[in-house]
Length: 251
Image 1 (cartoon, one colour):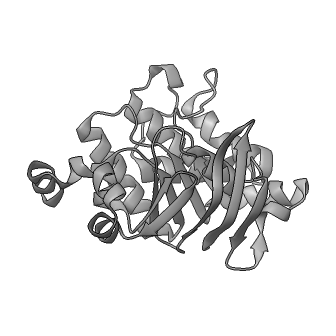
Image 2: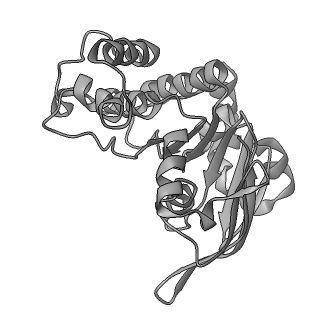
């Protein structure tokens, strides 16, 4: 699915967040949304997931269906096409990893427990969590929490995968593992992946498409093109452009 935001306007109280924001997220590609803190990255993801509505504007799916105009029931149905990896995992502390991941299927499908078991095992294998399904979230490392959150986001086979700061709080080796995992998911499923991130190295390594939000509006293109043509983007990605960073990214 291709997602396109058109002229989004949104304010919190007297503070404008979007002032005519327009951007697109190409079908089947990995797009990264970058912005300064408070710039509206997570707000945009919540709008795509129909968890928040703009004050005006449209969010089109494949050029026709406007998510902003959906009814509550239609919004609920849309969310079955969308997987969301929240920044802090958003796992239920009292449930095992298995039960956290199985929960959406138990609530929203007619699958038998045996069929659910097969689906949970499938996503656990995909994210490298075999053998830890009976652990509680509090027993996991930060990287494992991200993997478990991703497993839950994938369990309903979404066509759109939204990831809010998936690299936040992780050490560099774990960041690379999560990058590789997201790339593998994108290649295997063909899902449209939208990632919010303030991690410039990861963005340069994995993004097919970059949306840079500033002052409520967006510029977009490949990371390499925007860095070359837009001084604001170049400043934001200065770390990734230094010689040592380029050497690491090329390895």
